Structures are given as structure tokens and as C-alpha cells.
Length: 223
Image (cartoon, rainbow, N blue to C red; front, top):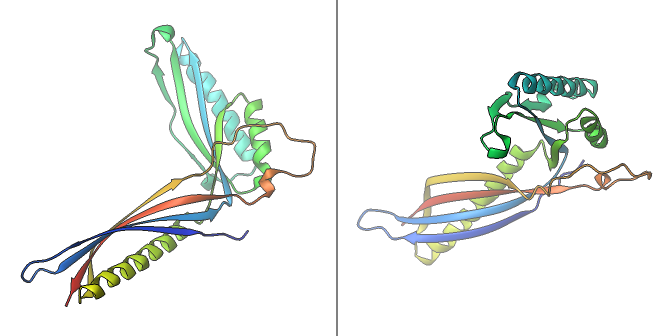
């Protein structure tokens, strides 16, 4: 599957003039939005149970956990595509739930085969697991992030050169650089729907999401 990348760059900049032998500092904040074609679906699953007996709550939770583990094995989902938190249990403090114990556990499944998407949902519901949602993602996020950072640095250098030329200076070394990445606009959670009696699906349409990158860069402008 081909990957489509769209990069939007926004730049905010300031110039701090040096005194004596101190260099003039050009500070820039650049932001980019990188659009990535999704190649995996991430299932975010929550297993939970409530009971006034903590042992019963724990045992019922473990039954669901075992069913989910078997489902993952039966579908041939690789261990590397599964991540999970440890089971936790707490006593609810709300007045209406006084004396009730609640278990909780978060599981993430990375689904590379989109044809399994509906089957996973149906099997989860059959096994009494009805707290889940799914989002599009990609295995190429780190590579896309690197490409986005490269574009940010190039844009920052070009902006610094414009200021330097107008001040009769040249762009010197990078004094500092700080980058941050934030995944966003992955689409609203996709919830369970009955499978239609037709031979096509929206999943056949390539889906993209965006990753936002920020870079704070400071250049020295020298004579």
C-alpha cells in the first residue's frame, strides 16, 4: 500500500540582537502536519468487572482475560502486536456503589490484516467484552517523523537565511533544537456495526491520519 505524505509548515520567529562579541540569535518555532496513509488498525480494549466480592470480581475478570488471550491466539495475531497493562482492582467510593469492587485492564491490539476487523469486534462482543474502540495508525510513524523534522529544519534554515541576508549576516551554527511529536486527528473512534450483505466496505478506501510536529530552533547569525 502506498503512503501519501502531506506536510504543512507554519513558522514563528524572533531575532535577539547580541551585544559586543555576543552573536545575534535567531529563534524560530516551526510546526508541521504530516499526513500518513494508515496501514494498521489499533484496537483499544478495556476489560472490567464489578462485584461486591473482590475475589469473584477477580475471577470473572480472569475468565474474560483468558477468552481474549485465546481469541488473539486463534486469529494468529503476533505477540509483538499485543500490549497490555496489569490487572488492577479497587473499591468504588461513590455512594451508590459503596462496597462494590471494580477490576480494570487495558489491552492494545495492532491489526495489520484489515479483513479481520469486523471478526475481532464480533468475537469480542460474543465473549462479553464490549468496551473497545479502534483507530487507524501506521507502522511507518517514526520514518514519517524523521521526514517531517528534516522539512522543519530546512524551512527554519531558509527563514534564518532571509533574516541574516537582510541584516548583512550569515547563518552560523545551531545553538539549540527541541522537537516534539503529537499524534492527532486519527479519526473518531470506530464502533461496532453489523456487517452488510454486500461485497464492499469503507475499509477498502485508503484512510489517512495526521501527525503534528513542533521544532524550537535557535541559530547564531554571524558576520
